[in-house]
Amino acid sequence: MSNSNKLLSHNEALEKVRAWQSAGKKVVFSNGCFDILHAGHVEYLSAARELGDALIIGLNSDASVQRLKGPKRPVCCETDRAAVLSALQMVDGVTLFNEDTPEELIGILLPDILVKGADWAVKYIAGAKAVLEHGGAVLTLPLLEGRSTSGIIEKIIQLHTQ
Image (cartoon, rainbow, N blue to C red):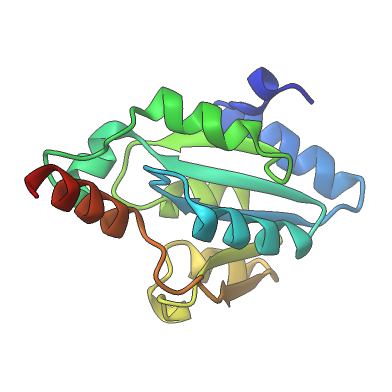
């Protein structure tokens, strides 16, 4: 699958998820802003992909990131963030969402496994209830310590103020 074929509308994502599930494949879903991709993201996404046969990423739109992170974010626009994620071999599809959480999207896609970082308690993970009620699993994965987009931004600011 070429990178350009990985950016999916919600309907296209649903078609892919159902096709994979009909073929007996296990679909994993995760979401986030993925503003400045770093080693922590790559390790997390690799671990998520190893849990199943296909990995779909719900990517916060620019408007969603601004509401969550503030008016100066995202650093990278949604089309660039989607392109970078799509270029990763472990990612099988990327779909943008404009809401603050992907709860509605997850309720439509109903992946077999919903994954978030270990900094989330399962009871607070958007979409967890729908996935669990549909017989799926909700898992948290360890994060690579000391790696965060906010940390990278802070280092850049420090370099420019010295």
